[in-house]
Image (cartoon, rainbow, N blue to C red; front, side):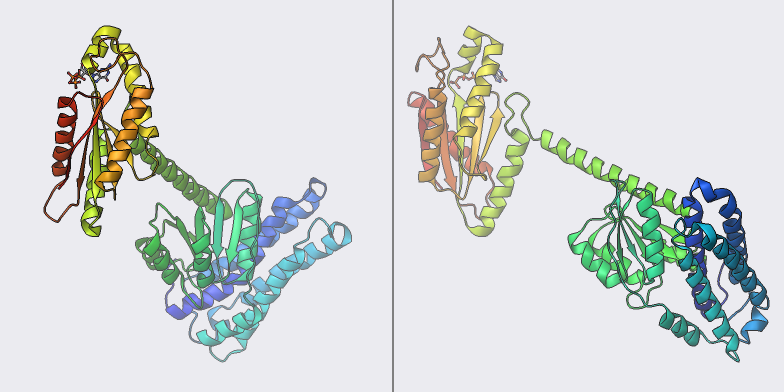
Amino acid sequence: MADTHPCDAHIRHDLRTPLNHMIGYTEMLLDDLPPTCNDLLSPRLKTLLDDAYRMLETINRPAPMSSGHFDGLFPDWRAKMALIEADFNGLKSTIENAWQEACPDVEKIGSAIGNMRALLESLSAKPSIDLGDARSQQNARETATHATGGSGHAGGHLLIVDDRQENLELMQRRLIREGYRVTVSNSGREALDRLESEQFDVILLDWLMPDMSGTEVLAKIRSKSSAHEQPVIVVTARHGSETIVDALTQGANDYLAKPLDFPVALARIATQVYLRRVTQQLADANRQLKQFSYIDGLTAIANRRKFDEYLMTTWRRAQQEGAPVSLILIDVDYFKRYNDSLGHEAGDHALMRVAKAVSSSLYRVKDLAARYGGEEFAVILPETELADALSVAERVRSAVMSLELPHPDSTVMPVVTASLGVGEWRPTAFCEPSALINLADKGLYQAKASGRNQVGTLGQN
Ligand SMILES: Nc1nc2c(ncn2[C@@H]2O[C@H](COP(=O)(O)OP(=O)(O)OP(=O)(O)O)[C@@H](O)[C@H]2O)c(=O)[nH]1
């Protein structure tokens, strides 16, 4: 239903608040009734709920309530209020006689009814009703405090943001019973502080709050996380489509209207929790897939694609910082002969061992060993000068030879050996990584030409 005037909306909101509390506590009591007193108390609670919902219909009725005398605008309120009070008194006397312990929240229902009566009386006492008065009287009666807590199963971690303590308490208790972990904040500011250090599956955000409105809180949340990353369900007492459209266009994932229809609220919360989980799983799977796409299937070290990307990243950083980059190219000697004499499977096995020897020879996290292609490997050494690169290359050469993999057909040694080429470059603005690859390749050619199983270099650019 659309509110007819902004003042109407506020007065209706103020009237709905104690009524919603009363309905919420009554529904909870109904849910929790022990079987022994179910037959006795359940009809009384249902009658109370029916009358409360009738009152709610009247409050939501699209008649202007912001000007004129309240009794003229809402003539049947006394009769409706009296019915609710009579229902409650009957309920209370039954409970007091026998079921006090089973119904711990009955006093909360009573105090919500008391608040409702006081608000209606104060509106009725005015010569003509006025928004400012209605709000300040209600606010004076209800102090907003905050509470945190809640434990439960891994149903999801929820943050409820609402300036009304009763709203927080009601929702928190009901959601905890559904298996959620629930944290509450009584202001947008406090909620934003929490978000700095805590993660929530879903945020239930009250739209109308005094210090920082739901709109502002949502804007701040969306400046940091998308709707996929941080679902937000706006909870609004305004039923007009304008508010709902506003909330959704500002990035809310969904909305709930007050008074909360609890089963509907549960279904919507569960949907958002589920969607967030699925989105996270998808993101994890994509991350993993990306990792796999960078790994060589045979040797399990970085593949050529990773090599190309990492060399480019290293190159760009070195351009900015004026740092040197060194590269080692490694070629297994006479590997065709190895395959031919011992078989392709033995060749695969040898390549796996060589890859392990190369990567084990690197001590810094930022150094990258990759399979460059076939029986060729490469090592990228960021921020490394030629002298240091030459000693890493020597370590690699020695590690390969020390594997002592028999190579009956090699004219270098009777074991698998490798030739290595090393280059160092300080990249300037206009040169590309291919220059460094060419330099290292010339070093490799030199190593081969000089008899293999050695490190060759043409130096630095
Ligand atoms: N088993 C196996 N062999 C491979 C693999 N990739 C490339 N090779 C073989 O490696 C050999 C490389 O041969 P060449 O390029 O002639 O080089 P080489 O025999 O090492 O000779 P030099 O480089 O001059 O010492 C080829 O026979 C390829 O089939 C692989 O994944 N597994």
